[in-house]
Image (cartoon, rainbow over all chains, first blue to last red; front, top):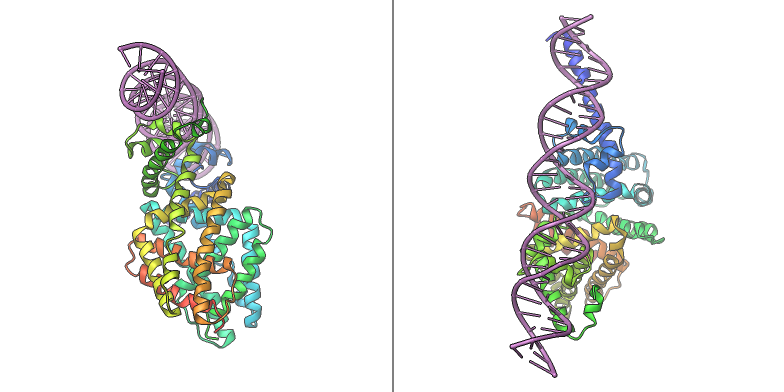
Length: 206
Length: 206
DNA sequence: CGGACTTCTGGACAGTCGTCAAGACTTTCT
DNA sequence: AGAAAGTCTTGACGACTGTCCAGAAGTCCG
């Protein structure tokens, strides 16, 4: 394989991947709006610049498309809070920033996150979803752990719970807030911030 | 005479309600097996002693049937842990019993609970589900609160978090354990017990 | 028994679904 | 230029969905 053909084939691959990403972005809009159960490939195509047939040109089937979508979204989502870790100077600041960031995510990206919860729930029923869902869940757990361990460092106190427990607690708080917030509860975000504020210090030895 | 509500107010109310419950029980089996998205009325009927047409004789539509089902289940589920509250003599015993009870539920009734999570998630998308889901969620929150406040009484220490926060934390722990457990992780239940063991004391002032 | 009512069946209807493939259009290569 | 490869549209397919309905079957009572 010469340098030229290598470059060419790579360019084609890039273009292919580019269109996949473009279609996945369209699909994400539709999925986050309707949820897994009610989203059809035709609906996805209608909210994009292409016809429904093209989806099978870029994705093997519906499952592959959806998994590609959620991975695309979570890849960006997973690094969102690292900025907070990087800039926080004190434990209290980290705690406040983290609580605020969760509330902002809940408010601005609520529809995307309900999609994530929807798909994670599908994994409870459909085995084919589990591998990918568990992998994403693992990266989220690590993201939370970076927050918690940084908070512990800044506090100078050791952590008393496992990464899994810490993640589960914040995930529960977020999920509850999301339901309340989408249902129109005006206090949902404040309750979330308060919950995080109270929960984070309890993960350390007092 | 085409409306279901007319039939309800007829003479044989008991028999009518009885059959509704019978059909709902069949439906629960199917729903907990397949989940909301993939359960059809024909599938439900096939797992019962009747044909698919009869479902529209006892329920207005699919949504009414499913909501009736989950309410039937949660009505029993919500009182399951009150036994623990009633018999616990010490805080430590309550803590251990509660952790064990959650693990047992996760193991034995995992498929039913994934259905609950599935429907609660649907409420994030479909507004018509929200009212019922929020109501059930509220009773679950109260159930957890009875545990936590009894634990606080037995410990002689005040609680530091709100009912919503306490519920969200345990719900997160349970949900995480359910996913792991259904995925075949042998440590899922022990992790759940450990998480509950660690979380419960942290809800009080040390 | 016979009629009135309730309960239940099974098929029909009008959609929607994922998937596929034939062909048209576009780009790239020789 | 034309051939080849890549990209996209369109229509079709069989299967499945919730809903409805005509009528069979069962139940009750005079």
